[in-house]
Image (cartoon, rainbow, N blue to C red; front, side):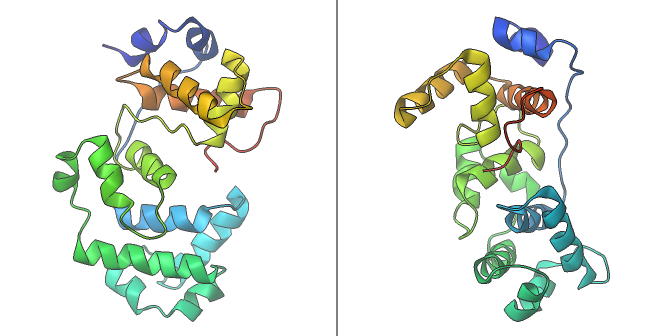
Length: 209
């Protein structure tokens, strides 16, 4: 089934999706760099994050480094490209995990979404939100929903007229609505972010926590 046919059963989502082209998911081969770049980008503007990522790559002559090369890069050098002490430590954590545990795609394909999230969040510095984004954008998983994403929350408050004053009840309502989108919740998230990007009312940066 085309994901749009399923998602358009939700009349509010159907209206939101009108005029949007279908999204396609892709897979990233280099999960180490995806996670490192995600950590670098946390709580930064897109421009600032891009500058830091480029400085990081410049340490390795513009190419994506191997985990061993990242580990061999002292924390003070990583701080020199604009990382905080914590982020420099987290970047090293990712590289160590890659060597000790691995990010083999065949191994990951055998894991369901929750198992994969649990696997990635073993790494100090990788939270559930980062793992959810990885599943969507690096592993191409079709049925991931991220209830803690501010962009998704803001879009759903507006579209479904939700009250977010009670955080627990609000989260439950987000999950209830999103269940009807399964098994294509990732695509629903993509359309929510796209709508918010093009909404006439600015509400922050989609995909940022």
